[in-house]
Figure 1: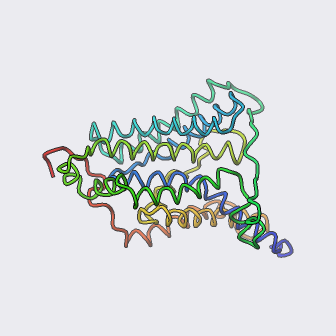
Figure 2: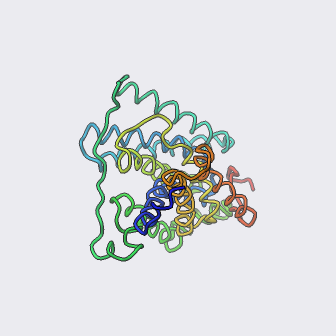
Figure 3: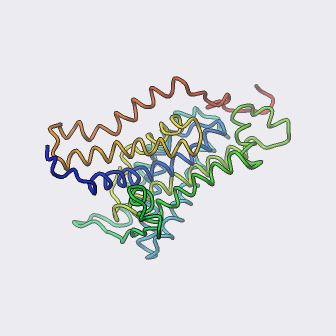
Length: 314
């Protein structure tokens, strides 16, 4: 193991990398917090993120605007969220099966559409990504400055949405209604609020956020799209939501746990650690499983979680 590489700059770089790894998961997890607070389990995040990655890339590639790519990805995610809402809320299908179906659909459709848009090329199409924009003064703080305030604008957007999500969920009437519909949808119904509409809106928010999370990969990180590029991040986002106990601020912590494990895996490879590369690649997912198992024992799911609602029943 090459310990000579372990310098102050190297360690801080690993910490900053953890934040970048965490960002796409944080976007998806924030949206899923709203979805699960409404009582709906959406296991289709992986497929929605893939469609967001493709649509964001195609939008940016054709318009020359990265922000146009972000908006297209959010819109695509909302459409996928609407599909999940129709299947799980209106048709009242099993939410686990419906979510897995959305994931399979997103994986296959994103691959098909990419080939239709770009064909088979020896060199994949690329775009210019969001550049690093350090925040004046804050980026100069030792360690924390480079870790949190020396990134691209999408990382900052994710941080802002943590606060926005917390405010909406705990300080607005909509947030109160959403939390109530996940606990006692029949009580919400008797108060004259539309349970179906609330759950549809939550799935649309969750879909839009997952779409943006997927778009982060080609627009802010890699500059290109390839099939299955989300690599399980959608499922990890679901685990992060359970870890966070459905709270936006704790979702940030949960995303950073995975991001830290992923950054550490990369750092160990750089240091030529005497650990099989296959085991290093598994590290982020192993950490996620361990954390999820430990926390889920104490997690209190919403009372109406994954239970379809029909007026006059319950």
